[in-house]
Image 1: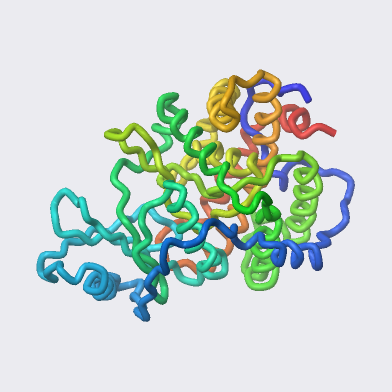
Image 2: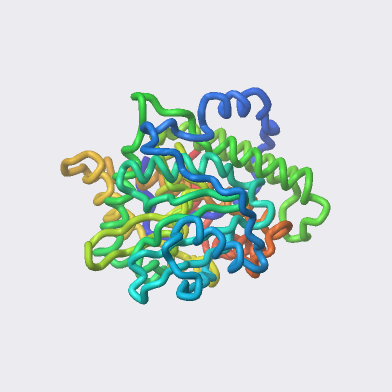
Length: 386
């Protein structure tokens, strides 16, 4: 397929114009089979040791007392009166506080408290397995413990990036290299099925059964969402994008740049798991537009994407790559960017209903709609093909 000319990014599938009606989602046994086939978590290497689990529940609205109880378990040599704390407010799923004694934060414990009802969105046991798997491959910090509604882990030194950083060639090269490294992680010579359709089905079912009556008028009806989801699955499943171990949530603040070591590392593995290679990359490209203040004019241009993908493919293959190889991945990535929008739109509808975090989740979904209005229909039709 020919590469489309430089143009604004693709539109969300819910607004691609009317097409012939398609069959309704036929999930049922197929999705259950996907779950039983191992899409919930990669097996990974043997654990170095069991992670302590404390029977402590931390109050979301008053984190410090519970956090300090955990610190007494993890750092018994710290004097309570010397423990300093720092709240992080960028997260839109969980609540996070750092605990440390020394000003340089060389030894710093992060206490993360799960957001309200996030068990609807995240398999927490799977998250711990992902954490340990990535740690075993040198891609994650130390996991110190879990507790009833959260976990504690090592503070990763460096700067959390913003949209202005990830478009810099010297930094997006490092990001491409790290993603290529993570995408090589697998076990036992075989890969489970991608998590994408199973998770999207679960999210859609929540929206349909628990949130549908309260949906605002500007959100498409669940029947439309169901048709679009079936269309996405039918079309994207045919692209033969490799199934690899993915981060699946590579927004800017989940990328930590350590200037002293000259590398980046990814944090927050709640949504990690085996998935389509092109989804992970397309999802990251969507994040160029930002989170709180979304501007899809910042979606990476074709030239930027192709350079990024060239770095990625060269790292993955260990050799120079051809323009044809870059072009093929470019087309796949921009198609899967549509699925990324749909996935996070469903997520935001659920979060808006249940989360206690002060964030306008519905505004984040309308950002994708604003992107739709900026896109050329001819670009979308050429990108998606017949």
